[in-house]
Image 1 (cartoon, rainbow, N blue to C red):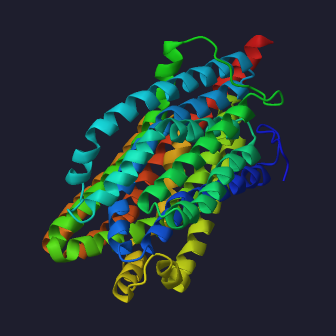
Image 2 (cartoon, helix red, strand yellow; image 1 turned 90 degrees about the horizontal axis):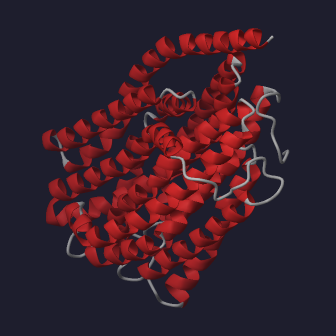
Length: 461
């Protein structure tokens, strides 16, 4: 696989593969951050199942905190690609330096806010008296490493958007491998339990952050990281572009919090913690699908943004088709794996036969409509790459609304476990609505952009 990709000239299908495969694998490996933690935690003697439920409550809050990195990087990276596509290296450098500043400010502010509210958040969002101590330990240590988490995630996207997907993969692989190695040492050898898993994650993210910083300062990077000058209009535009992917990820976390709360409420004192343990396993499995698929769609944004900036609508269309085909193919494979191998996956987390059996059933329900979900992911992320933030935001928020309504209503009408049906319902409905809007709005947009670039070229002659 080549180290550097030409976003404007390389054959599109091959280019998409070269960008998508490393980022998809990187995100797959990134999933191991949470999955490996939960695997080891679930096997802690005597307290494993309760500790897993506690970490399950904490998980969406942690994801909500880290999602603020996408507010900056998923806005700044497409803008940077557009500047590079238009040949404006100085403009691209200004975007990178200002996004770096914003990540630092967010890290400090969010660390303070989440630390002060951490106890209330856990009680509000599904913790019980039995699971609270484990959730509090995990969340407190993670908050201490917020800066590392935000910078590692954010800066990695600026490596990928410059065509260095291999370095982007290296950032994630380094952290994930360290986490896998440190988890058993900290949890079992040092007998730190849940705290050990959290410290292993913090140290791993710190190493990923340092790696990304070093890579962005290397001479062969087209647009290296500099401190630069503050430019508020650039920050405002990056935040506007990043609003859609941020809300997509942040509201996913909020909805998982709602799911946990609903399971605890309708499950009652007896079944609530049991269902939360199952939910932690189900959500871990879903990450194996959504994170790599997000790696495909986000990792290939640079191709769409670069060629849109250059006014090459034909390459944009080929890129969109290639991304969609790749996402659908991935979900078909994952659907087959779900029905063949999910019992093996579940056994990695628990020794309880009852929890394992129910979790397998919930996984099959939760993933029933992942093929339409591939369409939704492609539309939302590539709309952002094209600068159509409002379209991306509407499609994302519509899906969340359907999920929220289903999560709140189905358990009230049926049983607590009916909350797991909300995912396939929203995946089907949102994919249909988003497809209609995308096909109506994007082709005319590409035609206008191509015409504008042609007119500009003729005027320059």
